[in-house]
Length: 404
Image (cartoon, rainbow, N blue to C red):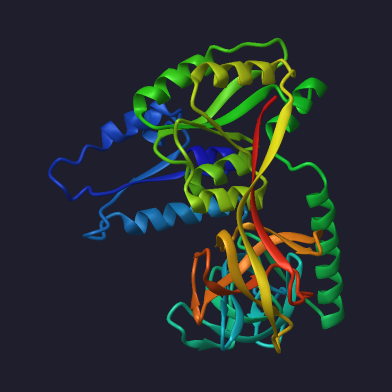
């Protein structure tokens, strides 16, 4: 619900398990009303459908209502258009090279099409469905695995078919320059950025996603935060819950321009990687008074950030393996800490930083892995960088922001 509201998308409620003896749809509707979602038979405008996934009862009604919502929103696709879509995930196969799972949203994607996804381009060499069966084309609404990208596209990037290789290369280069420029600037969605917006009168709310170790802590912190006041802005908690910070929390923060707060709780490794890639700030606190004081100062525009970098791991490049597909693999030995797939990485030569990026692929022998520890060998692909030399150093870092 929090995600749908933050994204501003229509909501269709499916009340499942109606085949069970204790099914109570009215209780569900009452709980929805407590989250400001009123279904139609309660006088609201939210469509709800009672169904059973086991027996199939109500599924036709659900599909019918989804089509009605799509029609009202004028969600249409033209299969005759050049294809557009979105990258769901990507991976590097040793034999086939980069591949991406994508969802076509408009037009038709065909073998031989030139395509661009963010700062990555290529030509469609092969298409396969979810069972690996080869396809010649993909229609709107269909997911498929596509081979032909020059390097790994990023999940969430939009895919677009273009007329020729020159156009594809030009668009990818332009996007690469744009991302480089954006990365050189201050990261978006940080607390100091929100403070500046509050000072300028651009925003009236300090949006937070709150996680704590136990529910009692969640309630105590939430109550204290909601009591904060300032002349220019107020605190709005989009989501509060117990347990480690997850990818879902980061996605919600990214979609709504919020800061993620962890009180006496850490973040999952995958959530840290996603936050780093999406530019979402995660702030950790162990003392409630410090948390409340920081948020109050943020509302008043007085909190100054302190950015600290922590070295997660270091590796030395010992061999360089050029690929026929334009991707260079760095053969490394981890000399300190650990190297993680998706982690922020710096390429250094003679102590000078050559490139900042993320680790797109990490392999131990032929196996794709998430982490390599000190003393082990690995093959590394760095997103958007191929100019390795033997002796170069890779440093995986983590950035933490705290108060001054």
